[in-house]
View 1 (cartoon, rainbow, N blue to C red):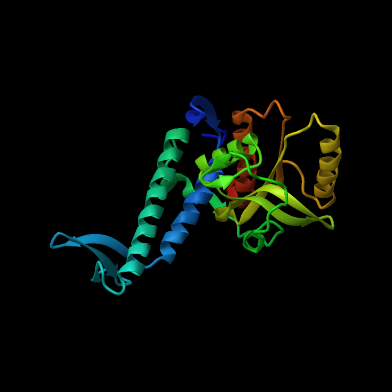
View 2: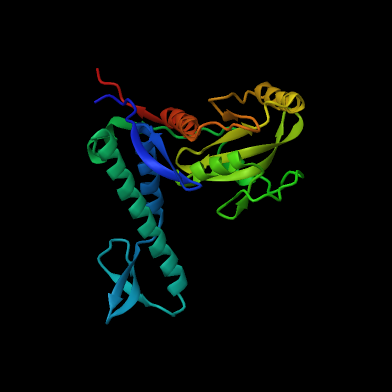
Length: 275
């Protein structure tokens, strides 16, 4: 089977309305993400939950996993063991879910195709993990006292709140309203999205007042700064546009984000060619 995208519809809810959105994440994304979670799981000590005399315990296994010690709730090492066991449980759940999605969407089993792909070692780049870790928490000085709230975060516009909702639904890590130095100037980027499995970030900018000539002039300079630094739409950044009366359809928002993720995945996960 070729690695064409398989379109699968699902529902998300905004303001009581049901919106149907199509998912188009490619096979390379699933392979790279599964491999990443497997590595993260291997880094953790083998600790899992169990019961002893009807009480919950954490079982800490030896390296060969033939022996274990039990740590009881309320003891000195319980918080640490509990955290490790919960992390392992979450990673295993994510791995199971990813494998299931890969099978249901592409009719491919990870174990049967994983050897056909090579995961390239990431090269240092401008938007790598070091960039993500270096981001400042400084926020723009623009007023932000409206009611556009998503998971406790306040957004300057309804469209930005919806973009954040899509990112949250996709399970992506992101930061909002991030200060960066671009082409010798300080700019505030609407969203920086982090893909740890590929050691990459990408940016999202929403231009929401394109019916305002002054706004267009100001943000035209911002777009020019991005291009001057080699930050191009569809490669390092996603540009989304609208005006005070119209925002991009949610399906388009998600499709552009997924297209960016798919491109990043294909740059890291390579399928071997057969002679």
